[in-house]
Length: 442
Ligand SMILES: [Zn+2]
Ligand SMILES: [Zn+2]
Image 1 (cartoon, rainbow, N blue to C red):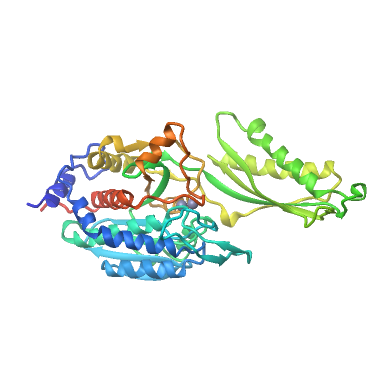
Image 2 (cartoon, helix red, strand yellow; image 1 turned 30 degrees about the horizontal axis):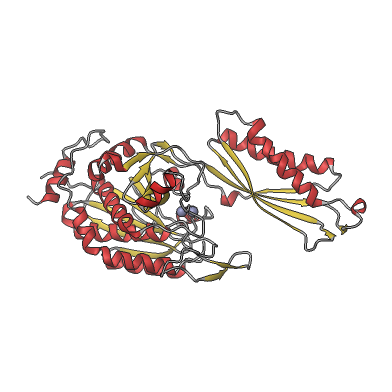
């Protein structure tokens, strides 16, 4: 009996229900299989990193991912919900497991100084020319998906069931999961019993993972406020209604929603991330545009915060004798909160602890980040989403000792250190999938 067979037989000996006890995996053969393909994975990672594409523009990224999945023996369908990629590997009777990687990059000019740094510029949806960078590590998430696909193909005689590996577009704008589901992801392809995903994390060292059982992330809403005034000469403000002053007042008033209206034991965020108005020092403009991100942990608070934003913006306009502002909650960009299945989390994390050592598996606090992987879970497939540490040990230690802070995701200096992050990602995800697709003992 080879070592993997021993591992899988040991796994199969656990109860078919999601049991808490998981056997030791000291004979884990996966790291050697990952090491074999590591050079190819690192060069694939560098390719993705230097060829980033914005949300909804992931055409060549999707084509490359599709090619890699075909190379791993998957039957691949492209253009599912935009640039979505669906790879299916059927391997006899058994459950269906979906593993997702996100594909889009961000409108940021990269400043990492890496030899494979992106120099890509693109036109965004508002026709602005922007730099493009994989500042959220989706390049690494995709690389881990390809590594998983290859290992699972190599180990085909050790498991049974169906593995669905998907490349999801437009995660950063909360649109891709919804679009793939609307295009029949759970109808045209095998419907998953469980779905899994990993994501780079910029706070933990490479080689570590972190997770949370139950609610992990928050509801995300996107709100646009257009403040109207009456423009005029900057030297004659008394003949105008100044929308810049009004917008400034609204920004300050919005701060009282979380501090004065929400139960202090609840959590919420109202951030005005963008404010634009006017063209010149001495012209009072006609309008000012505000862009907000709103984070809430439950539906009641979500409703309350969105209503407060509208009330506060309109009340400030009344007090300034300005026209009523336009408050638009973009329902298309809503991302529901992410809940990890508790039994699946417990079972999978126990395996991670065995494989990596308990000191490398961390429980994290809930965050007010958002992630549209939640949509696959809400569509009826219990899920587990976890984070992959990606920083060099020495940088984490220096930051903890009061040295330079770590570069965080969504900034121009962030990049995951490829090794051991990729190896840990492929290793842990393969363990998680094999655990759900284990072969029945004969
Ligand atoms: Zn991301
Ligand atoms: Zn992101």
